[in-house]
Image (tube, rainbow, N blue to C red; front, side, top):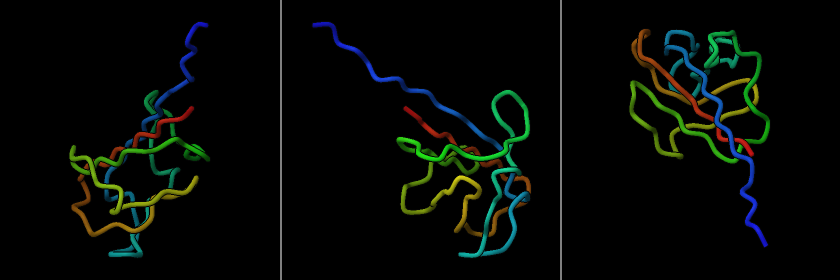
Amino acid sequence: MPIVKPFMNSLRFSTTAGAGTGTGAAYNILATAFTTDAGAAATAFPSSPAYYNLYINGQIQTADTSATTTTTIPDGDTLGAATPIVVEFVVN
């Protein structure tokens, strides 16, 4: 019997910390503040990814430092406005 690998894909979104609002636990970045790999404005994040990776200034963040919804990345800290933020969703 052949082994069938499950479909896996990754979707990456990028922005800067200055696109977020609030400070501390109230810090929030809207999905619409991100651009896709194709350079288009994002409208929403995937609704049920297998997992996601969050990178702040090129450093991967541990799972306990963030959360996502289809429309936001809430709960961050105050960062320099030009700090790059990339989130990669792995979907299947």
